[in-house]
Image 1 (spheres, rainbow, N blue to C red):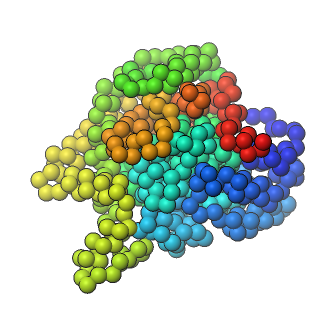
Image 2: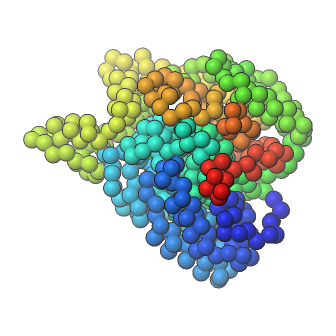
Image 3: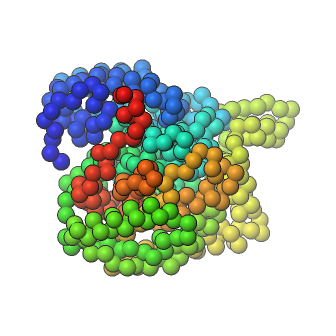
Length: 499
C-alpha cells in the first residue's frame, strides 16, 4: 500500500494499521512510547465497557516500547518493532499470568513463552495485555470466560464472537493494532466476522502450537487479528515457520506473504459451494455475500460452482473429535502440578473438588462428551468413525481444489447475536461455527474479511485455500479489500467516546 504522508494526531494513533505505524515510527512522526500511551488511554476509556482484557500489561508495554524506540534509533527495526499487540490468554507468557479464561488457572504464570510470543518479542512487538477468551477456548461468544463477557464494539449488547472475542474486539475498538488468537473450529474467523476485522487461520502446522494451552491438538492453530489484509500478511510472516519444539509444526518454507498481495484477480477461479447456504441464514448476510461475489467477478475472478457433499457432517464430527481431545488434554489440570488446588482428605477427592470448582459448565460439558466418546465400547463407534468422516471432508476439499484456487462462503450465517441469547441452548451456540468448522477438520487455511453490514452489524466473507497456500488466500482477500471500503469504517463506540 502507499505510505501515508500526513502525520496523525494523537487521537488517530489507535486507528492506524501496522503498516502505517511502521512508516510513521521509522519517520519519527511519533515514538513507540507515545503510541503505547495512546493505546493504554484507549483501553482505560473503553475496556470498562468492552472487557477485552483479562490482564493489561501496562508496565511491560511501556518497557517494551522504550526498547523499541532505542532499536528504531539504531536503525535495527523489524516490521513489528513497536507495534502494539493483544495476546489471547491461551498463549503462555513469562511476564503475565496465563489463565485460558479459567478459574483453574487463575494467577498461573508460565515459566516459558509460547513460540509465537517469543518470535514477536524478538521482533520488538509490544504486548498490551492478555485478552479474554471462552474458557479453554471452548465457546463461540466469549460468554464462557470465567472472568467476564467481552462486548462487541459495534453494539455492546451483543457478543464479539468466540472463543477469541477479546483480541478481536480489542483490534476493532482500537485497544490494539494487532491481535493473536487461536482457531479450533472458527475461533479466529467467526469473531473477526462479528467484529468487522480481518482474521486468519493458517494451515494446521504452519504456525507452532508450542506454548498454546491445548483444546483439541489436531485442530488448534494460532493466527492473526488485524485491520487490513496487508497487516495479516506481516504478522503471519513473523510467527510462521517450523519449530522443533512442536512435533506437528511443518518443515515447509515460509513465502513472502506481503509480496504475494495483488489488486486484481485475473485468472483466479473461485469456488462457490451450495452447501454453505443453510436454513436460518440471515437475509442481510446473504445479501452482503452475494454483493461480495459480484465484486470478486468485477476484479476478474471466475466463479465456479463446487460441491462439498460431506459438509453437513462437519459439525457432528467436530463435536466428537474436539471434546474427545479436550478430555485428554485437560486431564493434566488435577490440582497437583499447577493452578488451583482444593485440598481434600484423599487424592481422588482433591481431583474431584479441584476440577469441580475450577472448570466452568461448558468445559465440564465437553469433557463429559469427550470422555464418553473415548470410553470402552464407544471409541470405535464415535471417535474412530468421526476420523473416517473427517477424511471424507478433507477429500471433498482436495477434489474441489483440483478445479478452483479458493472457495468462498459467509463467515457465519448470522451477525453478532445478543449477549445471553444462546447461553441456554448449546446447539444454537454451536451452529454459530457451522461455516468455519470444515476448514479445521480439513486442516486448510481460511481468512475472514469484512464484506458489509446487516442491521448495522459487520458481515464477514470467508476465503478458504489449499493447504499451505496462505499466500493465495491473502491475495484474494487483499484484492477484495482494496476494492471496497469496509475496513475504514469504525465502530460507533469510538465516535461516541470522541464526542
